[in-house]
Length: 113
Length: 112
Image (cartoon, rainbow over all chains, first blue to last red; front, side):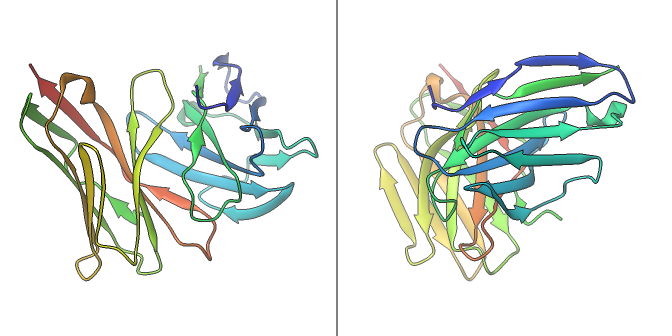
C-alpha cells in the first residue's frame, strides 16, 4: 500500500461530460503529480502541485484542470470529454517534489463512451 | 516529446538468468533517474534510483547503470525470478524542472 488514495477506481461517462478525479497524497507529502496512461502507453505527465501551488505543467489539455487544496488533496477535472480521453489516470505524491521517488495510487480508469 | 525512451516493448528471460532493461533519454538537464515496476491493476512502485553523480547503484538483485555520455541507463536483475514479471518503467527528472518523465515501459516475462 503506497498510502496514496485515488477515487473513484472506475468511471464510465459519455462524450461531452465532465468528471472529477480525486487524490489523497501519502501522509506528509506536499507534492502531487497527475499522469495519464493510454492503451499500454507510457505515463504522460500532466501537472504537478506543491503545497497548493502549481509547480510544473506537462502535456495537459486546456479542457483539463487541476488544483490542490489546503488539506493537500488534489482533484483533476476533465471536461468536454472525448473518446480519446479514455485512459488510466494516476496520481502520485512525494515529500518535496524535488528529485525523490514518487509514490503512486492505483489509478482511476476512465471510459468515455 | 519523448524525452525518455524504452525501445523494447517486451523482454522474455529464463528464471535464474540476467534480465537487462534499457532506457535512453534526450534531455541533458536530467540529473536523477529511476526505475519503477508495475503489476496489473496497481500503480507503479519505485524500485531503484541513481543520481547523475554516480554511474552505478546496487540494491540486492537490482543494479542500475548510468552512462551520461551516451544518455543511457540500464537495469540489471540477477538472478531473475518469476515474480519479477511486470512492466518496468524508466523515469528521469531534473531538479530545476520539478517534473518526472517516464518511458513507455518494457514488459518483462520471467519463465520458470
